[in-house]
Amino acid sequence: MLCATIKKDTQCAFMTAKGCSYKGGICNQIVEQCKGCDRGAEFSSGWYCTACPDPSVKWKSGRCNLATHVAAESVKETTKINPLKASKRRGR
Ligand code: SF4
Image (tube, rainbow, N blue to C red; front, side, top):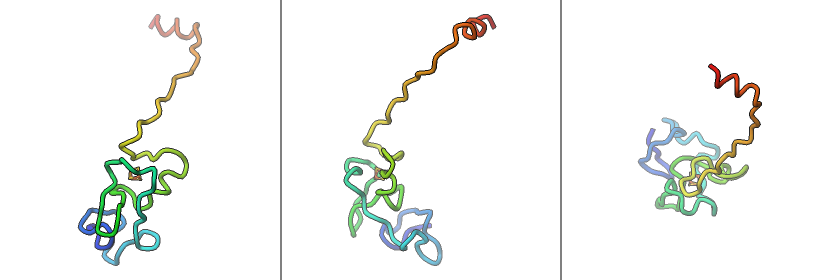
């Protein structure tokens, strides 16, 4: 449904016929870590995230998973390969 409060006329999953269903009935502004992210947008009352209502929560336990300006940490593959099993797989 289209937002009728902070992010006027943008699609929002929290907007209902009775108003904004997010806690407090309002979105929170972006935080320092969000600067540079393409999902941040300026509205008449300030800068807000177009993807989530409370950006501070997205950064609480590390990097925001929706951020466009921070590269995802590459996950090193550190699993040890059993040489016996590997040779069996090659034989298939
Ligand atoms: S997607 Fe994440 S980093 Fe980007 S503006 Fe939203 S909360 Fe901030």
